[in-house]
Image (cartoon, rainbow, N blue to C red; front, side, top):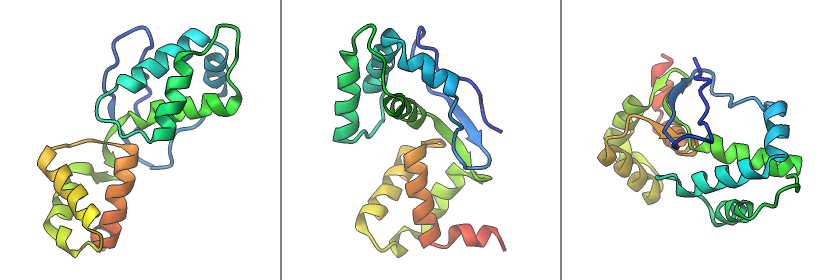
Length: 161
């Protein structure tokens, strides 16, 4: 079950927490893509909100991309790819409480118990940070990293038997 609720550009930026049951990602809405690409005010507002959103781990390239959108001029449309990237970054701020029928909090707990079996110290630190934060939801890119760690620890396979 996926929430269709979107963050309104005219209201406060609030955290969206929901479940994505199939894990396939979000479908591109070409009407939304076209609307945003042609609306410089929306582009600037979205970039401003994304840059100020807490808990993101944007890359340098993503920060530069968003900062460039802050100066987007009226009458100048984004390219289709630029609009796609902007929407992808917006989607990255969404939080999920479960992924592919797995509870995020249960996966964090199980990974924490087995963390010393991970091959990479940074992954151990990542799992310890998640456990220490008490999080019950995660952003998409952190979920992908958690799932990779869980596959390495064979946690996911244990659920299928």
